[in-house]
Image 1 (cartoon, rainbow, N blue to C red):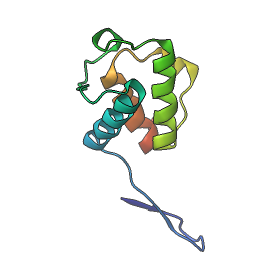
Image 2 (cartoon, rainbow, N blue to C red; image 1 turned 120 degrees about the vertical axis):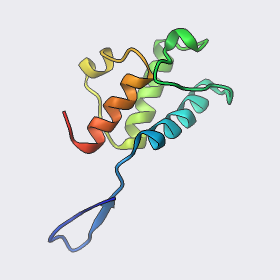
Image 3 (cartoon, rainbow, N blue to C red; image 1 turned 30 degrees about the horizontal axis):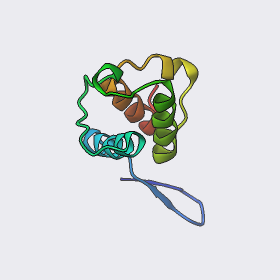
Length: 99
């Protein structure tokens, strides 16, 4: 946990996600987007592995992730995603402020 605020009147605590919590959040997101509870995610999971994962579902996943983690993806970043592991790495990097 990282406390952010310094000299501010109110301190805001920011919890940086670890890989396990990112996967847990993504599991919830995928379950909601695909309306299924039987999806198991791994680093190698891709659109080829999940029936119905089309461009609209991809957008729904990414918008949900942006809202959940309070981050924004560039078009280049979105285009670079080939599997769930890529998404997890990108979320972790953005959440910690690393390029």
